[in-house]
Image 1: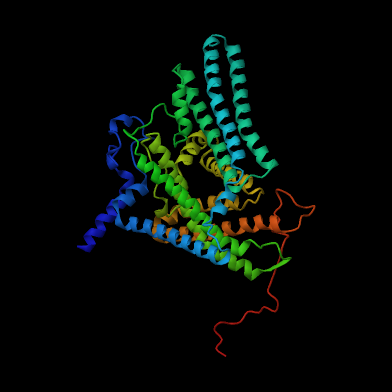
Image 2: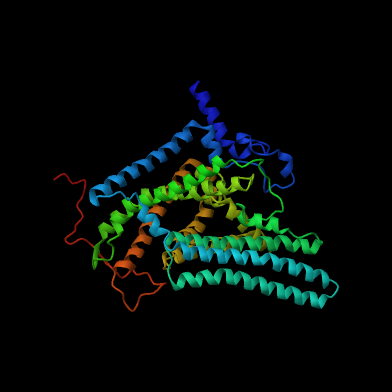
Length: 477
């Protein structure tokens, strides 16, 4: 009987992505005939929503993470009472991370205004193209002016936030929000431009402003006039998702205060540091690093996107797939963020394949994605330190062909190795970036200081422990 129950549960888990299009979790989603002609979008829930609602085992794991959050909360309260005589519960860390939020809001409003200005330009170009359609020369000039205007708009959308953040550093979370939104609007504008290019050739109607404005906030980067929609807005689900977002922000703040600051906050105050201390600190950051990675994924790709999907009645909630079970890095990169992957596939990968071939197209996709991530980190931290670019754009790219065949042949073993790489990779990220951050704060300024040259390489000096020798652990006497 136990074996039969386990088999049924396993079958439910394996068939999540194959749920019927007309499924109605909680009685919300509409019938399948609305999205029958569009294979890209259909009514479906997020995998974790289905798993948590349908499996007691996954619900228990979710509860474990909630309990860990509560334990960290209690630990923080006790620490604050003992050390400071007051309760802080990471509020100061959150406030510091979202510091100067007014300046960040102004930059975001500038980005939104650029995105809104694009639509009148789109209408203006369409009207001019219809008037000049019988004059080939003037049509080419008008098209050239439109391309120049679009390039100017996109350049301003990127250049102004980059210049402002480079001129004066913004707080970490506020800077990350501004730069992520910058790239999101750039990709949205590009998607609409490509979608309208075929309409000008076919002489079909342009999107209405209502369609365009909806697309600016819809949780997708692929433009359609219509998306599968839900019948009602479950405001209880929206509130619950935003509560999860807030809880995870505090969760990461607890991890930062309890596991990162004790190891790295004084880095650079002494002229020398022992290599063993650095290595121990890196290993101590492995577990909080991967927990932060998982929480960040859940916060952005599940809770945040589902909240906006619910408010906008956006029916397709497949923002990611079951990347945690994969044994191939190629599948992982496609599955963990389908929103960005779909845009890279449609607007970079597929257009490049006929001209450059598959290998070079894959390389360009990895390079663009890695560079965008590095820009976000550089502008958020206030320094250029391409650790993530090396991990993602170099090692990650090399592991794609390596795990292609071995992942199919040894799926369990390769999934284990992938999770091992996630643990150590996040431990390195949660060590090297704080080391550089605090080295720039604690080390004395010098003439060689630069946005692009790591400070932690020269200050402090990493040395071996004095009189350190290796002893054979198997020697009895």
